[in-house]
Image 1 (cartoon, rainbow, N blue to C red):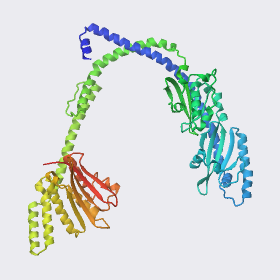
Image 2 (cartoon, rainbow, N blue to C red):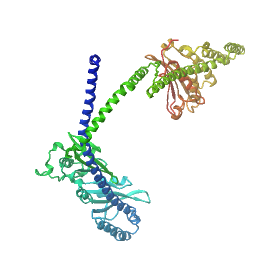
Image 3 (tube, rainbow, N blue to C red):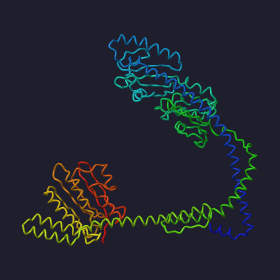
Image 4 (cartoon, one colour):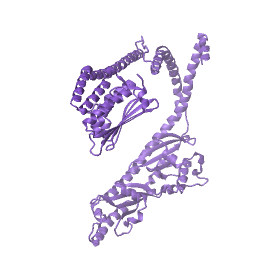
Length: 604
């Protein structure tokens, strides 16, 4: 690449100008050639699609209107109070029930069948009812039918197809016990319901209707492009588990028929069902596909036509070619000059600065003397970068200063010398009166504060921190009358390392106050474990108390809560050692709580 650039730079100015013009002229000419070819196909395809979409939309709406009509008939039956009385099976006198069937059900069903020739059968399947011709049958006959079980589970009309007929099923709700007890079954002649497809101009294209489970309900065969539809029919008829395949099983395969087209250009049923609306390519053949939903049954009407059926005629855009050529030439010349002199150079400069910032260099100087939008963008990026640096520095410094101030404020609340002298006097007085328990408490308290204050240092050895906790637990055991056990399991190797002070005592205090003290049965036990895991030190503080509720456990490390100092401890560890360290909580209600501290091996 550098060799080509170097060669171009060494050309004479005239040679560069001629070469540039040649490139600039070739680009629009190639663009216009492709444009003319694609535009001609696009215009014809759009014209064909517009008519096809209108026809498909009309057909889908017509089919949906039919389904709405049939669904209205179904709703009128299942909501009829007289039918509810019959099928709820609450009769005390079977003679009355028989009269209701003859006087209410039979005339109504006869009227519906007479007015709707597409309906081949209407039957109510119920339990414990006498069978009455085709109108009433025992549901034991259809217990294994999918449509029957789906209707019992649904509150809507369930639609399906057998290939020759469209099945509609809907359950009668028992208004007394709110439980489906009977199912209305209606079988529609599929040929009559879908007869309008053959009467429309859609019949010259490939038509497929699929249900919501992507099974084929209908596929026409007598189309100009029946190779695809014929493959749909033949594949569907081979699928033994697809009940609607029978509609396509009678596809004509006569050698002289249009259906004898090459099967290399055919679509499988699953391919047709999964086609997206628009232009698709299957097995090397491009198709225009239009899909419209038939809303009520949840079906989809697919219409597809091979693109090669549309005749190509590019003459309609020949007059526009010259105009477009001139526009492209002028536009390209203007854009090349503008981009090379006013936009590309400052954008490249800004992009280089951004790459440096992306690589982690936040101290890049970003500035532009230009007054246009690119110059403003460059300067604003520079100001934003400076502000980010200031905020980062301010945030971290303030955070560290705040935590250090909190710690020192805590430590400065007690005058160490006065405290130690006072404790020594109390210990001496306790010995004089032979109060050994008081002497032991005072000694433990003195040892606890001596290690806790740590001469004002924020870093303490793990050994001293453990001694501090032992002293604290000695005091707590005496205060609790030794009502719980304290168990230490510490790996001696961790005593070689240091940690920040005053992190274990708040956790131990919480374990006692909110774990051991709240235990209602059995003896409390507090276990402190310290181990080394690779480059990390883990300290677990576990109690066998009642545990922590999940909602509270999520807040302990993210918000200040009364009685819990875990948030401060967690933040101190993360500020000192890094974001990947700190406290994790494991607890189950009734099974105790374990606070896990993780920090790296550290020697201060």
